[in-house]
Image (cartoon, rainbow, N blue to C red):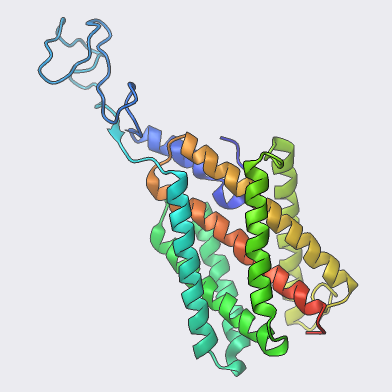
Length: 292
């Protein structure tokens, strides 16, 4: 499986590790744990079925021969959907708590703090060699604080903007889902490489802009001007297209029989794109309603 979404890039490597560890989603006959055929006997080595020949070195049943792969439950599309909905619910509850409990004077602190912690957790999950549901849930909780603080900040200045951004975000998500399902947009190798390069570039630009803003330098990317509007539009388009990479990676993971726990990683990747898309839409809408 080729790498696409950088958040889900290690799913293919995870499949290889699972195979190397001696796990398989199904047996060679399509059933979990079904025993392999004896190379000489020609008959399945089922319990109680007599062997034609005694085990020989290098064949199943012989001393030192590795045991048959252990059957595991592979992840499915339904698993990813359920985990994604659950993570969105966690983000929603955390955002509501932040909205209610964080005073206006501390919104900036909560905003920046959650962004930094979320970035660290996101990098750990993205480059971790294991699927860790606890880390994914922790990321959703932290991102909920970020979403709640940002939403409260913008809603206080532009009443009604949050519901507009939420509707627009899920509208874009469902449109991209339909386009991908209809194969209107495909995650071809060129598309994948190009989009990853653009995403990496945007991330670098946003990080540099954040650092400069801390020193009072205004680059014009977030001040509501023409450059800011253009930058947000580019981010919205790229965030929308990143769903295509996520969907393709999930399909590949299901096809390759990744263990069920990797559905958490797949759901995490979709959640990252949803939150990014929501924040950019929120910013864009604010530019058309007045200055920050």
